[in-house]
Image 1 (spheres, each protein chain N blue to C red):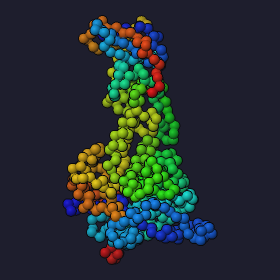
Image 2 (cartoon, helix red, strand yellow; image 1 turned 135 degrees about the horizontal axis):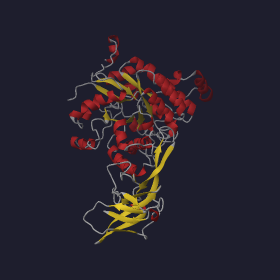
Image 3 (cartoon, helix red, strand yellow; image 1 turned 90 degrees about the horizontal axis):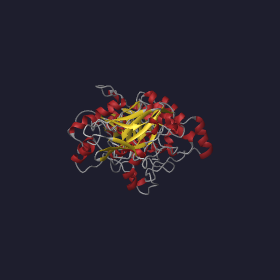
Length: 144
Length: 374
């Protein structure tokens, strides 16, 4: 099922936005959506480690170390999503934790057609799902 | 006795006794320096301020010097029953080396100690193996000493006592030491406790007052250095180095690694030099001497403790701790360790650690010298 999110520009570059997913019975899930270099990412607003609210997390560079000395590299192409509770880092493309890839976030693919973004939901039980930006909970990545 | 195969003893303390024994091993310039400034007396090297219990030996009425003060006496003790085929010497009173406050002098004493070990111990019996002791005040100088002394075929590891610079051993200032060990493929042994008057306290919260405290808390030194070395990625940068933890027991390790693994998941970006779960690195690269074996209430409790390790048979290497009062024979550790572990603990793990070929024959001494072993 495709759920319309509206134009990609609704999601500011590098900022985490909470989106309510609403079915006929009401809100049944929350997504965290962000845009990075004109690509949109979406994960469930629930850390698979201990349930932390990912909407309050941060997008952080993937920092790696040189083999020698104290040099650090920062792979800024795709920042990692860091949970605010225990600072676990997740690859937004796969949803997998960097240190423990067996732990994985629920991710949703997003497609863009004719200037409109769509969240691809695999659930077939629900009909007429809509998405609404949760303005009171939307926030820039906070301190963790 | 159920384990009847050969034994490698990884922690035997050879004793200097009088520091003046090293005098002749010092360069002429330093001997003149001491003559001119302290009537030839060498600065006091404090091993520990807890003198009385520390002096307990394996046999009442015997002194450290009489039991382990020269190669003949020591070999007569540890090889007499024919079970031990190799013994790694790890110093005793010289572990106070890094308490010396004069950095160049400390480096000279370290070199003298290694020459003394080579000349008066290793050259006297091929079953004895040595540890290159270094003063850590000047890591570049220490590295040169490792490169020099470590060339001797019976020098099989580097030994680090208390940190002279008050920095933990993962601090990059010590990298020359690890690089030198890496170049020669030598493990690096880290001593427990080793509290002196001028080295960091063995108790992490402050200075201790009693031996009873010190003895219980001695593993705190290991905790500090192991966490430091793993966090800083030292073992990743120096792939030939393995750590050997001397004398601190093993009961503390599972809990520390559980905590370390859990925290690493959230702190990876702060210590990106650590490239895998700390417990994984520990399992592959760290070995722990058995003495003093944690006094578990029974064999089942020890079995449960070891089950907390990734490979329970791989973590321990047998050590007697001779000639201290806490010395443990293979018969002693058999009281707590299951029989199926003994071949690994008493022989195979150490053989792999020190790179002795599988099936290599035990070193032997000429028959003409057997007299001294009787």
